[in-house]
Length: 102
Image 1: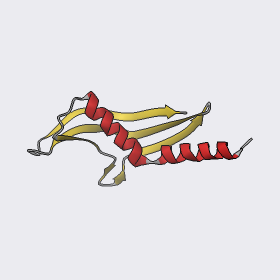
Image 2: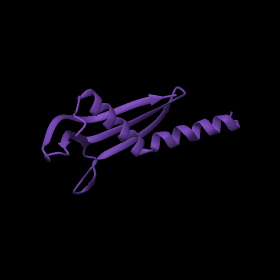
Image 3: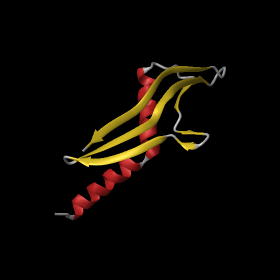
């Protein structure tokens, strides 16, 4: 039963979920906060390598909610780069991140 409001909400979810920049930006913001990274540093996670993309983007509609995942084939290094002196430090690794929203 699709009314105008249902279609609008569905399209909103798909657009929000498929916006890789939105998701990656939120991930970086959360990591920056949780790792207590200095404001003069940048957090980075590789999403592509020499042979192309290294992360899969998954969208699932479950129980009236939208589930979004980013899954790396192998663990990806989480690095912090100082914009002051160029020092690069690996602070962790990850292979999957997911979220749900209504």
